[in-house]
Image 1 (cartoon, rainbow, N blue to C red):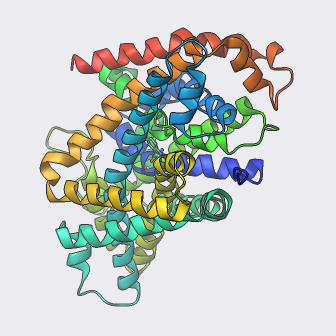
Image 2 (cartoon, rainbow, N blue to C red):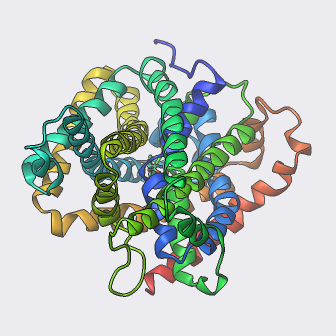
Length: 448
Ligand code: TRP
């Protein structure tokens, strides 16, 4: 049997895992959730949940993955041998794979929009403006073309494998993402109106605290760290036994929440700069415009009003979005592809082609029934399935897998783990606190 691929270094893993975590969820989701949940109070709650709830759950996935050296289905089947039924592991694993694939099916549509705005900016830079309406207006032809391009890019990277695909492209693209982000922030913060936005973003108003805010923050933390569906599990499985898992997990959590925070320094001030330029930034009910209108109307209008630099700012912004989306989408596609290559004799390029095409077809079905399906798929995957899977994975690590086996799995790369703060807290956390917290939030959300 050919030996299993691994990330070539610690940095390779960090770039890939941070690349998965840092996506549209950070640069669009986090700032807009902050805007619609009353600013800085949301930021505070988000940070607490990211470290106290999402990080322990991320660790559960990384530990299972590195120990099992396999995809989520085979991994859960393996550890259920301790105290559970293998069929249950298989079932939960398959649920995760289905959800990962469905997340990709809507994520790729949104990523396609980023590519179409990116293309528009390129056309504008070279002076061709007669296609602007096609690039920016919602139509099946536009959506289809850019969805296809984005899926092709995702499939290209995944077909190359772990080191030559995932690691190489994450390592190339993530530094570029960071540079673009910083450059855009510097530019926006020098514009008139930006300080108003900074105030909204950074001064907490704890009167805004509500069950909805906490729930939104939890969903955001789960989505942002790519949890529940086996993404982080499979990336953990490509990690060497020499690496210290709790430390790497902490670095990834820190980078992810850090970039989300920094993205807020770009988006929220930009909204207020747009207001200076005469754009309406509040809805009729008085809250900040958040959803798609923010990215595809408020910001583009802002870029237009900036004169000749505007096209370059637009280019940098949509390039940033496209890169963030690509390093995330590859991690989603890796989930079903790794299952297929590990459980059948199919080779990676073929598996990528077949599964990528199948997900592409699902995306097209969503596009053709956009009103009915788009929101439904997002709710089914991110609002319901991710928390349920999060609880199940904690149950696997906290209740089904033997504590000694868990300890042994973490010990590799961290010899003194028994005496660490991590080992004093984390096992109890994944056993009780994480599942209960997620459950409480979840029940609250079901009650509306
Ligand atoms: N975390 C990414 C973002 O913030 C999206 C993502 C990648 C994801 N893989 C995932 C979300 C798996 C849920 C599950 O945009």
